[in-house]
Length: 110
Image (cartoon, rainbow, N blue to C red; front, side, top):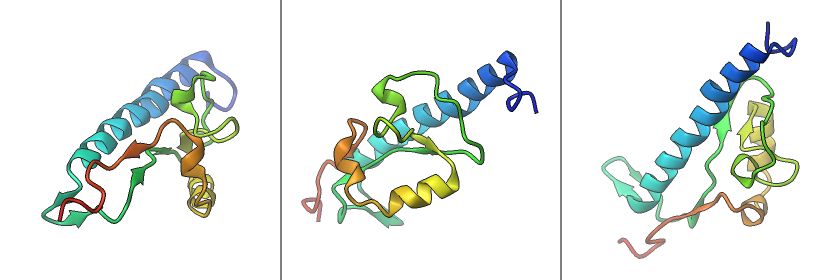
């Protein structure tokens, strides 16, 4: 696989199609969900925040140190499934990132 060997075209493709696309889509969806916390088949009003992350089967090279790409200094926003599972077990992680989205009407929408 070209990505594993550091092929610039493969890395560029992964950056655009996995990292950027994942973050753009999940940020958009998190903002929408925060503004629409109750729907016909869902209700997230028991939660205060959304931490939008992307999931990839591969460890992705994060192209920047910008906070947009990171939950913390060591945890990227695009994670492998095992990394995501580990993140879900850390209830304090949501409070150390700038990338959380507050749910608009936490427990006030009812």
